[in-house]
Image 1: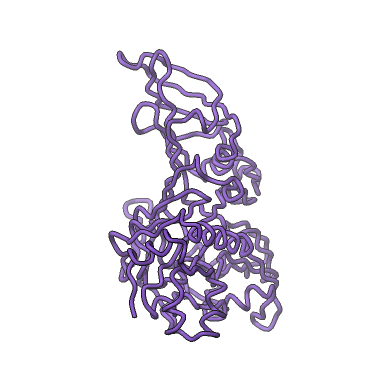
Image 2 (image 1 turned 30 degrees about the vertical axis):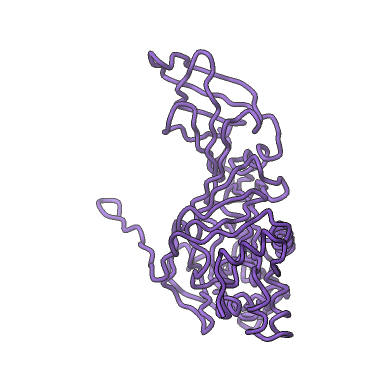
Length: 397
């Protein structure tokens, strides 16, 4: 038994599609059996919500009078990249506010940066643009300072090079001092452990071999209709996988883009990591079309079926030793405590399962009311791709 995207979209348009969340489908298949459920279920919604540092946005301000080719720009005192045309800029989520002391007085607080600017834009707040230029015959203006909000922009396009990591490390600190990381503050001598994943709800864990999620897939990007525009940076699918084909470490990633003017502020939040930097927490939902029983079976993955590697972020992570201290599944991690080397270790997540589940249900509702149709990928994500390291050559190696 197989279905096509066109057949599923016809059912969605007619209001007859059967849509379940990645949490609901597990029990549904247990009750009805795989083959019967594959006939009945049309779409499974998946989602994640958490920090995604490799995010940002293209903004177009339109032309002032006289015109100006902005060559340097700051938005709410946060630098934006101007190495593109006239009044286009790119703002990265991890960019620091001008004169932020960073880690000069360790640990830095990183109270406001690019991710916070993006949050404020989506929330409709007024922000200051300050721009400089060297001046040209056709763009004579050399300086501009003005207030604007997202409705004043011609375009505000979120363009994220790397989102939705397919599994990731679990972080612990084996040293004798507290360390500050992008996975949060880690106490000495393995007194706590952190992770970042929605587990059984996460998109690429429900489609581990990229049978339906690929270039051209429509996604729910913080409430806006977004798209997978490319494999994400650092996409590395040639990794160790379990018997269910789910990777046990970081693997695939997605490049995502969407219109910020359509986004919901609840799912676009600037975040600060003490001693590390600032970022953007983002909500992403991706529908999986149930084309056949095999695809459905993949969506029944449970937290207990997904393992992740515990890495020492005081030594093994920064030095790239490849050493893995242990592996735990997400059922164990979500319990809040695990046992490692004979001691009980508190576990916490920097992603939100609750918000991911909320996104699953919001996307489910949009599909059921016919406002969100599926799109067939134009290109599959690479399944056998490794990742190069940066080799240091020359006198400084």
